[in-house]
Each structure stands twice: as C-alpha cells, then as structure tokens.
Length: 398
Image 1 (tube, helix red, strand yellow):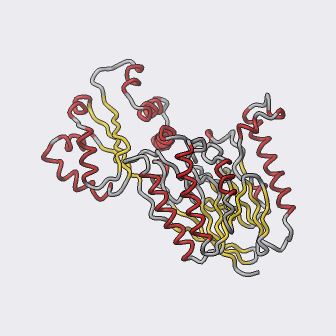
Image 2 (cartoon, rainbow, N blue to C red):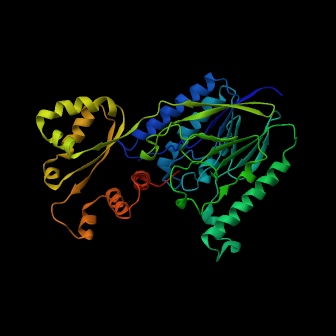
Image 3 (cartoon, rainbow, N blue to C red):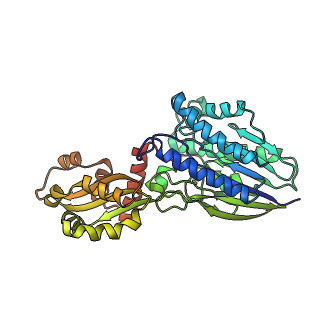
C-alpha cells in the first residue's frame, strides 16, 4: 500500500462566553489556533484529517450563537477540503456536541467530508476507519435493562457492550491486510486522565480488549496529549481552562505504511494559562508602593499574553490593605490577556465558626480549606482546585 499521512485533531470546543476580556475573545483564540492547525496540516501534506469529537463548547445554545460556532467549524473544514484533504468527523460528548449541529453540517453536503454521529465504517481502500462517536449516557440509562442497577454495574455492563460492539464493527471491515483505524470519543482505561479515578469509575471505558484489534486508535475527550502503545489522545489544540495550564496543546500527525504507524506531536501557539501563587511577603511588597516596580518587572514576562489567576495567603489585616483592583490593573498593564480571579486564603486573627469562614470564601477556596481539613495532599488539592475552576467556568471536559 502507499504511505498514508493523516492529522489527528480533537476537542476544539468552539464557543462563545468563555471567561475573557469579552464574550468572544476566547472563541477568537480558538479560531486563530485552529486556522494555524489547518495551515500546518496543509503544509505537512496530510491526505486525511481525523477529527475525534467535541467541536463545540456547549450543546444547547440559542440559534444566533450556534450559527456563529457552526460557521467557524465549517470554515475550518472547507479550508482543508479545498486542498483535497478528506476530513472524517465524529460527534463527541453530548453536553458539548449537539447531534443536531452535526446534522446541519451534513446537510451542507461538504465535499470530502464524512460525518458520523452513530457508529459506522469508512473504506478508503488504503485503510479503513471505524467511527465510534461519544455516547449519550443519559439516554442509555433510561433503557429498561439498566433500571435498578447500581452505578458500578451500569459501568461494567456498558463497558462490556462497547467491547462487543467494537469487535463486531472490526469484523465487518473488508480486508485483513488493510490497516484499520478506530476513531472514538471516550476514556481509554489506561489513559492519564489528569485527576482521580474516583470521578471516572462509573463512566464506561475503552478496555484493552476493545482496542486490541485496531492498528491505530485516534481518540478525543481527554485534553492531555498522550500515547499508550497504539492508542493516542491528541489533546486540545487550544488551552481552555486552568486544568490545561501545564498541558501541551496541539495535535498528532500519523503516518501509516502497511500496518506500521509513525506518529509525531505538533505543538500549537495556544494561549498560556498562568497561576501566580503569592506569599504574604509578596502581597506586602505589592501593598508598599516602593516595592511595586520590582514586583511588576519580575512578573511581566511570566504573564504576557496569558490568562492569569492569582492565589495568595496573608493576614486579615494585610488583606484589608490589599487592593485587588490595583493588582488587576497592574497585571493588565504589563501585558496579561485577562485576569480570571484573585483569590486569597486569609489568616483570621480570631477563631471563627467554620460556617462563617465558609461564607467568606470563594468556592475554590472553600474546597481547598475542606481538603486541608481532610488531610488531603497538596498535589491532590491542586488538581481538585483546577477541576473546581473548570466546573465553575461552564462544565468539566477531561
């Protein structure tokens, strides 16, 4: 067979109303990065693009917003197909990807574009693609066979049925000599999800048995690019929350020759997310005008063009003198793109009832205080803080 080169992209999450300087600023970031991705794919001379789900941020939106987001995705697709590239797309998580949006795009009859919202197979002669989109778990749970089952039993039953379904789809592929690629938008059991398995234990997963008969597995859903043998997550091309702060943003290029796969990750110029953790001394330095110039100089390069959050700890008295708005203005003046939050852990002079402390804290701070009381490790508290931020920003996507 000839060498086949394909780009593997997922989790663009086009959407308005992300936290930012204005409701469209992060949407513009995503569009700009995805345009860069398209240019890079064209320059790489890829013949195919596999888009593994979650094109959109939210599934249930008003038509005036949906039309803008759909137009952005379609513009991206057309840029690729205009260069003769074939684009295969599957829908992702139902809370992000409305099947109706994909059906609208189907009706546009875009050339060289293959869209799957249900399982299916595409035969490109040089290789075949099994498409297994994201599952609507809520609708599945209403089926009679799942009623009365405990969450872990539902997980086991659904995971088993996914393995059977994929085995059946693999058996339908036409030629045993042709490479077969699986596209899906699910959690692979061996993947690094980036947070506690406790939160994932009732979600159906792709097991080793599910993926064992495929030559390449191109997944979306987890925003951490990674490879586990022949299983790949491309991650998101643009950082979307503080959960992605330390994650490389980008996509994969895979090269298939016979049944051998060579893969390369390409990092994108995604906007940075930066957390400033400030001590009491640093807050005190900021409060004292004479020290402000040094603080600004040390911070400017770190926060340039970034989405920034500030977390600090100080005494109650110092907090009363600390002007958060002044810090926000300074950070913006030295080039920060947007100040997401300035949150403090205040060391109270008088012991107060836990209810009163909780009322004075932000949700992220309250979670951190609770976690400390439970003797949870600092590393786990940091992960939980990022997840809480994501939920507050509009829903978790792992």
